[in-house]
Amino acid sequence: MQRFYVRTRQHFSAAIKGIWFGILVTASQLTLSQTAEPSAPRFDLLTTPAAVAPRASKSQLTAVGRAGKRIIAVGGRGVVVYSDDGGKAWSQASVPTMVSLTGIYFPTAEKGWVVGHDGVVLNSSDGGKSWTKQIDGNDINMQVVSLAKSELQKAQVAYDNNKSSRITQAALDRALDFMGVAESGAKYGPSRPLLDVWFKNESEGWVVGAFGVILQTLDGGRKWRLYSAKLPNEQSLHLYSITATASGTLLVAAEQGYVFRSEDGGENWTRSPSLSKGGLFGIVTASHLGREIAIAFGLNGNVFRSDDAGKAWTQVALNSTASFWGGRVLSEGLILLVGNDSTIARSSDGGLTFAVSSGLRGVAFNAIVSNGIGDTIAVGPRGITALSGSAVEKGHN
Image (cartoon, rainbow, N blue to C red; front, side, top):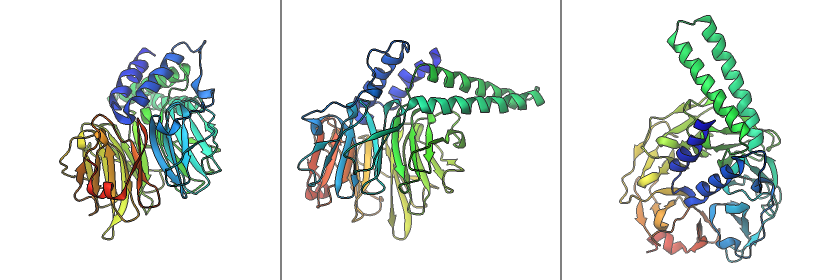
C-alpha cells in the first residue's frame, strides 16, 4: 500500500508536471488527501455537483472540443462551458461532479463524452448542456482487481508447472506485485485519473489514463471493458491521449516517450521505441500527399512525425524548448500545437516543418480548437483565449 502511494504522489505528479498546469497535480493531491482515510471523507468531489461560477469561462480549463457548431471547454472543479456564437458568450453546463475534467470528445453534434479525475466518465446527449456519470474510479478498481486476480492465477499455474524457471518466477513476482497495487488502489478509493477520450462513433469509444488504464465501450458507455492487459505495458506507464488515423489505426501517447499502436480495433497492440525521455502528451493525425501522417508532441519541445500511420517516427527540429500540451488539425490542413508561454507551433506542410511563436510568458495554452468562423479558441489556466486567424497564421507575440 505504501509503495502504491509513493508512486501515486511522486511518480504521477512528476510525470505530468506542467501538463494542464497544476490542475491535475492539485486535484490528484486533493483526491488523495480525501482518500487517505477512506472511512471518513469530509468532502467528496466525485459526488458533489459542480458549482455555478459567474466567471467559469475564465477559470482553469484543460481541454476544448466541438459538438457540431458548438464549442465546449472543460476544466477544474467540474466546470464545463459552451458557446454557440463562436466563443463570444459562454454558458455553464450542468455537471454532477466537482472533480477536475481533462478530456472531451463529441463524435456527433449531440452525443459526447468527458473524462476526468477519480476515473469519472461523463456523457451528454444534448450537445454538452447537461451531463450524467457513466462510471468512476470505483468501477475501474473492480475491473483492475479482477484482472489482477486473473493474471495472478495464470502466473501461479505456470510457476507450479515449472518452478525451476526464472521466467515463471519473474512472472509470478510481477503478478503478485500487480495484485498488491490493485488491492491498494481499491482500498483507497477512486484515485484513477482519466486523461483523454476518443470515440469512433456514438457507440464505440476509448478512454485512457494514469497507471496504464485503458477502457473500451461498444454500446455508448453503458458498459466499459478494461483493456490494459492487451497493451505491452508491464510498467503501467501513464497513457496521456488517444486518437486514430483516418483508416482506423489507434494511437496512444504515453509516459517516457512511448506510442502504443493498434491496427485491429484494440485487440492487439505494439509499442514504439522510446522517442524521448519525457512524456508524449498528444498525437494529431492528418492526410498529406496521400499518406496518413501523425504528429506526436510532449515535454521540452519534443515533436515527432510519422508518415506511415505511426509505424515509424522521426523527430522534427523546432526552434523551441516549450512543452506542448495540445494540438489540432484545422480543416484547411494547418497543424497547430500549443503549450508553455502561450506557444503556438504551426505547420502547413504536413508537419515537416513548424513555425513557432510565443505569447504571454508563464501562461500556457492547454488545447486549441477552431471556432468555425475563421478564428481559434485556446484554453488554459486563465480560461478562454480567442485568437484571430491572422494571429494563428503569423504568430501572436
